[in-house]
Structure formats: structure tokens, C-alpha cells
Image 1 (cartoon, one colour):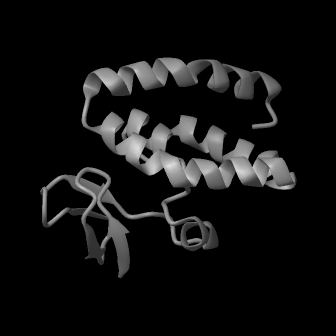
Image 2 (spheres, one colour):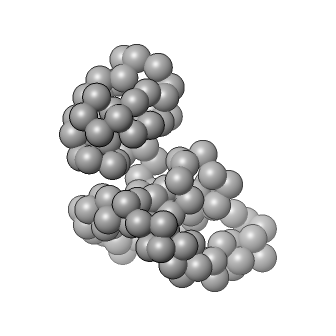
Length: 124
């Protein structure tokens, strides 16, 4: 069992399966991966905005952002500071994005140059 915060309505509840309907808003919620990062950062991998844009924490594009965070940003103090700032402000931004198909599409478009860059480097 894991405690999660619904990305759709921000209510906290307990899940005992990998997916469940939020008891408050009845939207489907996917349980975070069971790893140290979740506990440390307060979210399922911490890629809140990309998850809101792509609709699933398992999307291939989100893995590119995780690799960038883990293999580049986490190696510097300024990168760690940026990550902490992101974890502070991004959940509320992701919540707004997740409620609008229009904002989801715009966010995916805005993230596309990063994804192209990550794929070109083939490091990510």
C-alpha cells in the first residue's frame, strides 16, 4: 500500500494496486514506482509537468527527462538547486496542465525541443 496525492484533485489517499480510481474525483491514478526517489522527492519520479502533459508517468518522453535529471542535473549543486525549486513549484503547475487538453498540447509542444535534444545526444 502506498499513500499518493491525486494529480487531478490534490486529495491524499491510499492505493493497494498499481492503478486506482481516486475516491474523491474518481479519476484514474497510477501508483508511483517504489523507489528511493519517490520518497525523497515527494512524487512519482518528480517529472510532474511532463507527466501532466503526456498523461502517464511511464511515457517514453518522461524517461528522457528523468535520465537528464539523474545523469546530469543531480551531479552539480546548481542542478540540485534547480531540481528542488522544480519540485516546489511544479506540482501546482502540473495540476492546472492536467485539467486542460489545450494546455497539455501546448506543454508537449514546449517540451519537444528538449526531447529532440536528448535523443540527439543519445546519452539520454
